[in-house]
Amino acid sequence: MIALVSTPGAVPPRAAWLEVILWAGYLACSWTWCIGLFLPVLLVRDYGIMGWVVFTIPNVIGAAAMGWVLREGMSERIVRDHAQAIELFRLVTVVFQLWFLLAYLMPPMGNDAIILPAGGRLAIVGALLAGLVLGLRPGLGVVAWIFSIGCAAFAFSKGDLALPVASPEASGLGLLWLAPVCAFGFALCPYLDPTFHQARQATRGGTALAAFTVGFGVMFLAMIVLTLFYADWARAMASNAGGIAASAAVFIAMHIGLQLSYTCTVHARATPGHGTWSASRIGFAMLLAGAAALATAYLPDHSGLQAREIVYRVFMSFYGLVFPAYVWICMAPLTSGVGGNTAREASGAKSASSSFMGLPRRTLKLLCVTIGMALPFYWMGFIERQELWLAPGLGIVLAGRLLVRGRSAADGTGAADGAT
Image 1 (tube, rainbow, N blue to C red):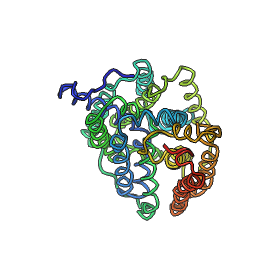
Image 2 (image 1 turned 135 degrees about the vertical axis):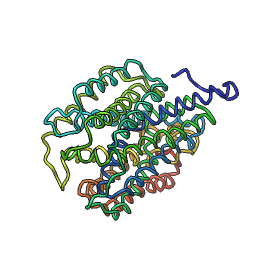
Image 3 (image 1 turned 90 degrees about the vertical axis):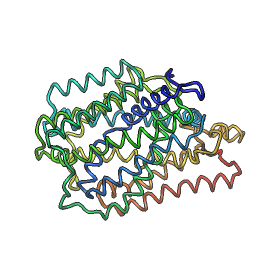
């Protein structure tokens, strides 16, 4: 565990504020993924500026809220009771970032991506390796954030960044159905993020509240504002339609590459109740990402979307459906005291029915059935871009929690079916 931990009444005010800044930078950059770096680009293209607003508000509030919702000791219980789900979240997130690096910044096949010269590619690989060697240090997040702000300042000085121009095909109607899905995903996904738990367990009281508030309400928000300003350029580059001046483009690409590298390294090194990833597990994640990038190069376009964007949206389904459904069905309510393991132990023979991820079999079955039933609706909304279908898909997931409660009440087991 990291040594920089606050103790109420024992840390001078100046050191406490330094700790807030260090952990705020860590949180901001650990959460600046290829979601915040690129999804707003797609939303602005499809829905105009309001697409960015619908993305940003629940994202900032949902991430910051974790520091306020979890009381002392609750993060430790979540990590203990849901270790396998957190590890799955960790793996998918790292593979997603590496795939995006390969598919959009350093494509293994073809040359139709955001152009990044050899020097920039080496710098990104160097940042990735340096992060794995240096380990988990909150101060590196502040360094990464300052570097990104510097890249933005340089690009602005060239006059190449500006608010995006509304696309002729942009329409805000789909946002009516997309907004609830965004709010659901951003509200619940943070509880499976190991870097969030790392920061929450290393801070206490007001320091934790301030770190999460400053980290997401100020530092992370600045990253998303930058995404808004380069949305036109990224959209043009991703569709092979040219872009901004080469010098500014390199700096923005460096910003993206550095943030993705930082996200990968902190997820590999985060240790809230777990060990850091071994070299073999890191290699496995890289292998998966490389295989996905190669496969993407041979996939056909569909429904007016490039193959890369389809794969990107498929990855997004984990954060819009799979992971929030797990938190909703298997972990909620988060504030109900002792973790699910203790509840299962209290149910005697009921604990013997536990299966994968330490969940009772019927809770796991309910989770899988719920995701399976909702998946076609999410496909229609995300891939076929008929957003109206997202409403019944989200309704199915929300109803899944009611079935957990209903079964628990009928059996008299209370929280024994997996609620933390």
